[in-house]
Structure formats: C-alpha cells, structure tokens
Image (cartoon, rainbow, N blue to C red; front, side, top):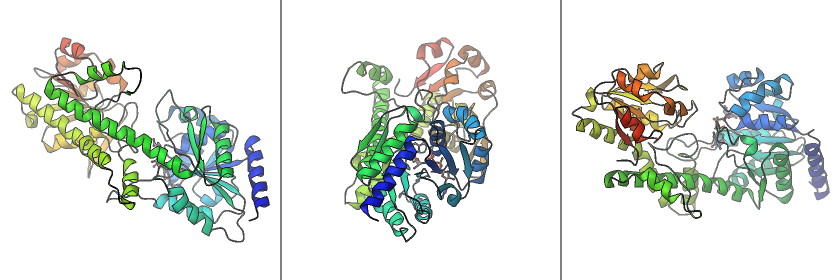
Length: 457
Ligand SMILES: NC(=O)c1ccc[n+]([C@@H]2O[C@H](COP(=O)([O-])OP(=O)(O)OC[C@H]3O[C@@H](n4cnc5c(N)ncnc54)[C@H](O)[C@@H]3O)[C@@H](O)[C@H]2O)c1
C-alpha cells in the first residue's frame, strides 16, 4: 500500500477517534476486556465485545458484569441499555467493520510451564481475514518482548491480500488490579508502543480519549511488553524476598512486619512489600515465566526468578508446618485438630481462587488429615480434583469447636470480627495464625488466643 494511502487511513482513524465515531471491538471479555469495553463506551465509542464463551456474551447483553470489578458492575447496565456496548460470539460480526480492535484473550502457561499463545494466534488469524477496512489492532494480553513483532505482525501481514487496506499495530500492557476501589481501569496510566510512529500515535490518542490517566509512549511494542514483564517480576521477586526474610525473622524472634514499617520511613530507595502465605492469582505467579522462556531462547537462565519461585511456592507448606508445630506445643496433633480456614480467594475482596495459596493450604491440611472448615464470604466452593469443598455459611459455623483459626486471605471483613465471642465458641487454648498479618497480636491475645503471624514470632 502506498505511503499516501496509509497516511489517509491514519488520518481517517484519527478523526474518528477524535469524534468518537470509531467503532471499537474488544476480543476476550474477561477480567481485562470487560472494564476496557466499559471505559471505551463511557468515553462515547460504540463497542462490540467478542467472546467464545456464550454465557459471558449473554451476561454482557443483559447488562450484567460477570467480572467482579466495581467500575464495570456500576456502569455496564446503563451502557448496554443505551446500546453503547453489545456482545457476540462471532469475531466477524464484532471486528469486520471495527476501526480499533483490542485483543484481551488469556495467555496461560501450558502443562510444561511454556507460554501458550494459541488464544492470541487464533484471534490474530481471524483478524487477518477481516482487514477490508484499515484497522488499528492493539494487543493487551500479557506476553514476552517480541510477541507483537514476531508472532502477531507476521500473521496479520499474511492476511494482507488484495482486499486488505492495511493495519496499525500496537502493544499496550494491561495493569488492571480488579476489585481495587482506588484504581479502576480509567485511572491507571497506560504504556503504548506501536510498530511504527503512526500506530503509536493512534494508540496513544485512543487511550488518551478513554482514560483519565496519562499515556506513556515508548519506542516499540517490545519495550511495552518488556515493561509489563519488569513490573510483575519486580513484584514476584520482592514478595519472595520478604517471604524468605519473614521465615528468618520468625526464627530470630524479631517482628518482621514492624521491621518493614520501620524501613518504610526511609523516604527514598525503599518500597515496602509484605510477606504472606504465598503468591496467587492469574498474573504474578505466571507472567515471570513468559520472560524466563524468552531468556532461555537467547541462552540465559533467569536465576532470580527461579529462586523466587522456590521461595514463594514453599510458603503454604511453611504455614502448615508452623501451624503443626504450634499445635504440638499446645499438646495437640494436627490430624486430630479442626482448623477454621478464613479465606479461599487469592486476594481480599474477590472470589477468584486461581492459584490461590489459601487453596494450597487447604489441600495440604487435608493431606495431613486435619479437619478443615473453610469460610470465605466471596467463595461458595472450590474444587480439589473431583471433590468440591464448600465454604461454611458463617464465620461462627467455621470456628465452632475448632482448635485454631488460620487467616489465609486478607478479606477486610476478617478484621472486623468480635474475637472474644469467636474464641468462646472454640476449644481450649484457641490459636490464631494470621498468615496475612491483618490483626494485632494485642487484640488476639486480649481475646484469649495464642497468636502467630507471618514473620512474627
Ligand atoms: N486478570 C488480570 O488482573 C490481568 C491484569 C493484567 C493483565 N492481564 C492479562 O490480560 C490477558 C487477559 O486476562 P484475563 O484475566 O482478562 O483473562 P480471562 O480468562 O478472564 O479472559 C479471557 C477471555 O478471552 C476469551 N477468549 C479466548 N479465546 C477467544 C477467542 N478466540 N475469541 C474470543 N474470545 C476468546 C475467553 O473466553 C475469556 O473470556 C492475559 O494475558 C492476562 O495475563 C490480566
């Protein structure tokens, strides 16, 4: 395609973005796609969402957010009823006439721990056949540096037959922390890196029109992809650091949480991370291994990530060992004890149990023949193999005649309970193991508990 025609295409999309007449297609209506569809429609664009999952499509078309994101839950019903958002299972219906297409499908690891880009490739192949109008294509799914240029671009280029009017291509990492009431999708700054200057400018202009936060342009999709890897590896490794030091300080008899609070008073060069029972969720335990894979391709072993994995994955086991030892000191045995397990979700205020350390703890406790009574106000049940483990219906039911409470998820509600009343329902010498450090030792001990916290003696 001639440079002149290309320029006219860019200008056309730019003016459609400015006037909000650009049609936006979001492919993949999950935790990332739904808030993005809402932010785009709220800014004035007509949005079509595409998902292979019929139930998600049906739910969007009813105006009900199936993702637990307060921003989407609040705004979606009105946007759907006004016809600003609709959903379909057919890519051709959503993307054929779209001007901006954003790919938000999952990027998991396969059974061998290798990046599985099959979902991204499938969507890209479909899009390569739908380039009869010029489109700005944006990849948001998390992946290693090089994915946009080496995987997505060649597939789209192959589709550039006689009918193709060309495309702009951008990578823009998603940083959403769904459930976070302070930072909804529109408040999080966005990094944008295009295959060429025009793509970068269009991408920046689109996000600038839907977000309240700044957009940061980088020189290539690879830098944008690498920035996402850096952010999540930074978290993974730093959490491993405080987890390892927490175990040490338990042995030293020094309160490590207080230690972190003290270090945080340094006004530069320190950022607090907090220890816990492990690392969960869809992103942090998975994303670093995208870069590990890419590093291996160029003959490099990311040793820090490997060590961080060893430390983080041993935390649930460490929690159970500590609990076992604490019970022994009270003359009790784990396999004869009842554990009231508070939380199943991987983080507070959500029902997501993907890679949840709380579920790992549940498995380990059951393996050690403890009686476990989980309670999670957000999660009804979790599946362990073929067995479904139900949450008890109330915290009182969960603690009744239990020997100990183990807090595995930082749901805020757990910080508001009447500890004295709960202790009264439990067996003699009740134990409180707060692996998330939500409660104070003083309040637990005042209520009659023997207290333990991660990193705390
Ligand atoms: N969840 C988060 O908090 C988060 C944060 C930042 C980045 N990310 C990244 O964003 C991407 C999406 O994550 P997510 O949590 O939204 O995943 P998700 O599993 O919740 O959603 C992905 C959706 O894509 C759909 N899909 C799969 N193949 C499709 C196809 N061919 N056509 C149409 N739809 C298809 C799935 O049915 C699913 O609904 C991943 O790469 C993830 O690593 C996620």
